Length: 254
Image (cartoon, rainbow, N blue to C red):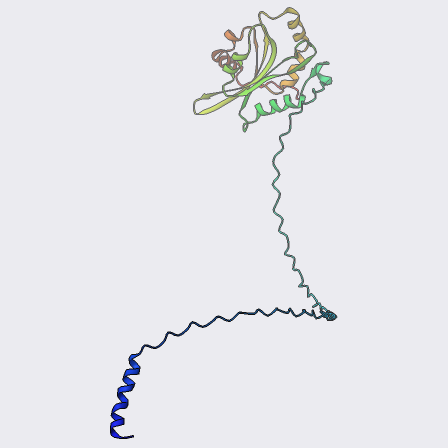
């Protein structure tokens, strides 16, 4: 190709390019043919169960350890001394004393002879404070006597407080007084024959007088009283003792 051809050729390409290109036709959709789905049969494989083999349980022997018993040391029991609570005993009524008949008392019965003898001994003891006692008949009985009362201290005032002129009975007292620098004592027996006492009671007393004298034992003087309030006084007793001059009358003892 000559140079002229070469120069012209580009002009043709330019012209061709100026012509619009025809529109592309839309593609024709192809018909979709659905192939039938062929389901393959599911073949289930049989489940083969394996046999369960149980392993034998081997029990291990239990080895028991010997129990070693420790010796029990017993501590000696200390016994506490039992404190016994005092049991309150109900008072038991003492049986009535049986009267004692003494031959030299002329059939006169004495209730509680031991108590009466103890009272007489106490009055005669310098170590005992008892200074007086009084005996009389048991109520309703004229052949039985008993200890009515006894006491210590100044005897005259004590006797005047319990005696009156309707009573009968006998007593013993230890009378003491101060003479110069010495203390004097005398034993005085007395008979109470009340001015207003029953005549029969006085008569029975006279029958038993010797028996009572035997009970008195050793005395210094004796006094008979009809009215204690008037005759059983300090002055009367002191004058009687002084008149006796200290004479001692020996009497039989119990």
